[in-house]
Amino acid sequence: MANPKRGTKAGGAKGVQRVPKRVYEAELLRLQQELVKMQEWVRSEGTRMVVIFEGRDAAGKGGAIKRVTEYLNPRIARIVALPAPTERQRGQWYFQRYVEQLPAAGELVLFDRSWYNRAGVEKVMGFCTEEEYWQFLHQCPTFERMLIEAGIVLRKYWFSVSDIEQERRFRDRLDDPMRQWKLSPMDVESITRWEEYSRAKDEMFVYTDIPESPWNVVDSDDKRRARLNMIAHLLSTVPYHEVVRPAVTLPARPEPRGYQRPPRDLQKHVFDHAATLLAR
Figure 1: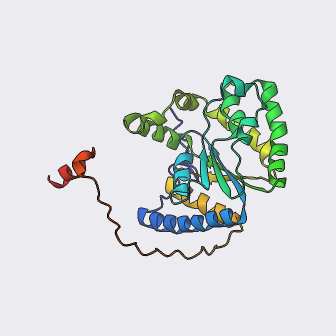
Figure 2: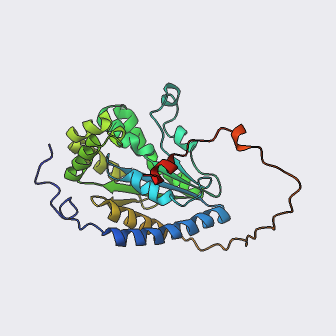
Figure 3: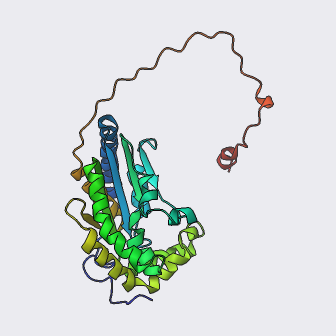
């Protein structure tokens, strides 16, 4: 169980005023409109953009990604959430499978966890050796500088959640059959390894919070506040501008040329479930 004294400081579960739903929804929609403008700028300018979402389990990364991409074109804005590496991938250079996911010109890639797995879960759970861990911390800043020098716009966000709020979210998942799939054995293990993950995160920041690609910390005990803050920050750091799209006009529908639709009973239609609801 979490220490009841934790999470009560500024930024903790009890120290955050929740953003009212009305305020949240209005501002979120405005920010999402700006994200669409940014997407069009990425497309028209041939920009390559990478946004990394990291943080503890249940910190709100997935929810933030959903709100970022809700109105974006999936052909331009792509979410990458890689599974555990295969045996072959474990024999590759560590960054290799992430390089394969980097954007081409005119694309935005959002990493739901990224190469920083090595500095977090792999380090804490013993999935990598000490040599592999320190090699990562040594190579990562160089790797990210290479991406930036190649013209990739790189942004990194760390979602910070208190232990009390994390445990509350875990318990909510435990009692909700629609979200139980989100509670993995690794999530449960993270409760007993809170301090190990804290030390790993602090050490990761020491080596990878560099001027060229700094970490941006998002306090996420209030998910609404976290989403608004993260999206607003991202927009403020990208020099996008509104791109005027060519005007689209619908052509006149041509005159009928004798086509007749086949009888409906020749096709298999889905059952009208909605009609049963309206009949109640």
